[in-house]
Image (cartoon, rainbow, N blue to C red; front, side, top):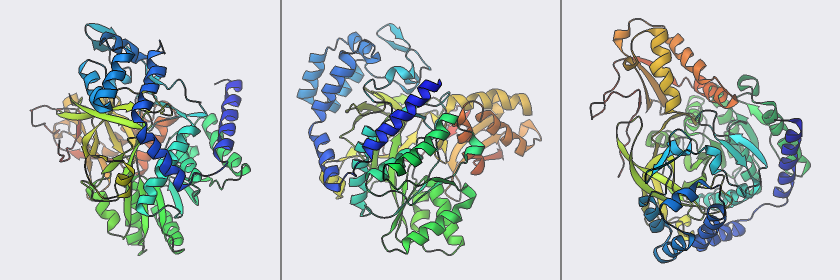
Length: 533
């Protein structure tokens, strides 16, 4: 990035931050924002499609819609007569959809005998002001470039406020234990909390800048945001390095805030929440009244049990860098530990059946559609790489009363392995399993396999299965080799590999790779979770 472009980026960040911090969003305003979004779903979708697709010759969706013979008037008629989701299902049947492989440019889009190849940047939101740019915590090559935008953070802060109100924690002291840039987790959470009128008391980062070596632009952006935020009147916590092994420090800070009598919320990853709970047990600390607001990996039954055992509770947030915040945990009767209310004011979601690239099974994959121009990417029936259950039901919580009646749960990925909130895409791991390890340690590609599971401590774990036929190996060197390969590339990869290293994520097991029920031996294996699919 040139000096001029860097200066322009900091100017946009400062200008956007100043306007963003003028006044917090109230609970009444937040409720009205969500209600208006729900009432105007059809109108918002049609306006977005007209402007971003039909009036935009560069839109990748325009080619698919033309092949399907669907003009704007046709789509408008379908939406008005059938509703959004039925209309999207008809488009899916007509070939108007994008798989995760097509979205990432890994695979050609072939429809009706015509072939196209798109780049991920082709799906960027052309109307979004780019206040700054960061990367997602998923490898996918160099990571997804995501535009940070304060208009979106304002909207998400309103959604966040109504969710926290449903749990009775709006206004409770807030802590962060989330990574610094290049991760898109920590800084946006800080922005949302400040906009809700409740800036985090402290921001702990499990990764240090000296270790992951983020680009100079991103290092300066964090310092700039902290000092500019303070200049504009906000209480803006500066990141403090606290490694995953120092969970006791986070637990002690939680206890200190709980003693004020207003509860406390810790934003972190589910596995990190479990670490804090176990540190509290070891230190005989009382976390009763604490709430763990978790995101970045599945909130499983085992993790929920660990959190409940110390008198705390968890609220799940489901989000992705490409889609934005998708939903917040249900405060009523839940169907699973990760049960969330879909933010129907911001998204429409349908499903289709597809085969998984590495799991040897078929799943009901989510297809997302953006309803508002604030979305980070313009999506029209685009896979996220996740699958799960969608249902409309009565739960009795305040989010349902607001009109958020659709639930998602048993949410899992089918194209990547995730641990400590860091996701490496299957294709990136495939090269290591099939090429790097056999070349260095012997054996064939079929002698190695990587398995995502949950260990006895409720931590997400990744086991590297090595067939006994390979012979004696240096297990520590094998783990070191994998982490070294994963850390190659930009700062995003270094950050994710550092998190996996700290968490002792990779465990070597001397056993033959797992064969699927269909008799397949796959290099990557995600242990199945029982669902209602």
